[in-house]
Length: 352
Ligand code: 1DF
Ligand code: MN
Picture 1 (cartoon, rainbow, N blue to C red):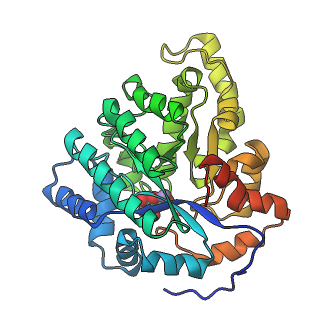
Picture 2 (picture 1 turned 120 degrees about the horizontal axis):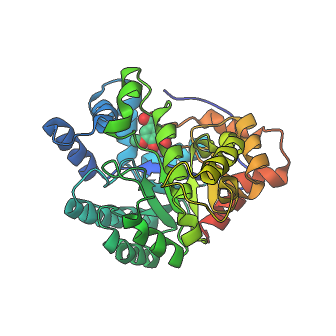
């Protein structure tokens, strides 16, 4: 599947792609063992990784190869698509499907592996730090190590064994992220067992829709839990054009306020701000998997031009032609530069 497209080799901006995945070969092997052993009671994992690890169709086969590469294949693909720099993170669900001990050591190994690749290709790659939510008490330690290694943020692949970061037991992660000023990329995963049923039945559990439902809800749970009142400087990034939340903002504000006023739910406490204000003040959005001008412009309008940035979602949506399409958006050069370069440089404090 080679596409030939004309991509402007000298645009007035650097193209920085911010949700780009990798997988250590060792982790793919562990995923295959987990899938074959049927020990993990997670139908979403079986659906996602059962497919990507065993299908012989061209797309999953190419994805397997590209995920594991942090050198020639990836850089050739970036060059062919005009991508100057990738912010790389551990593919979903990362370490989050394992037990505590395995997750802690795999996070360290994968961070070391990514760091080595960044050292080999410092102008092309930056990285996000994988931490094990199973061990919130150890997150600060690994995060500190990652900061010293030059990582630019944290990757979290949505729920961990059906639990969400809105649960206070995970808040040491937020505390450390805020203290070290590291943004958390809240990346999708398939919905947990108690949510996935009707989606799986219709083939809608994955990136087509289930990812977005799961991750949008996860971010909403974080907002309504009051986490941003407790950690006002915490920054969370979500992909896929905000996992639909920008489109929902009006109703979220209305119904949240109405629910709180009526005391409908014990769990729904008053917040210092409106739901939309957290989305505009604590959240950044990437357009991973949504190379679609109207959606990008809508998010820029309702969330803010300084909060929307480019992502390709390599290798899952490796589509060089999207770069040519986005280069041609009806948008000022200044705003296009923010979208492709400026916002990412600011959020991740990039120096190369
Ligand atoms: C898919 C899409 C898989 C994305 C991903 O990680 C992923 C997919 C396992 O197409 O199955 O990160 N994505 O972000 O859209
Ligand atoms: Mn992704």
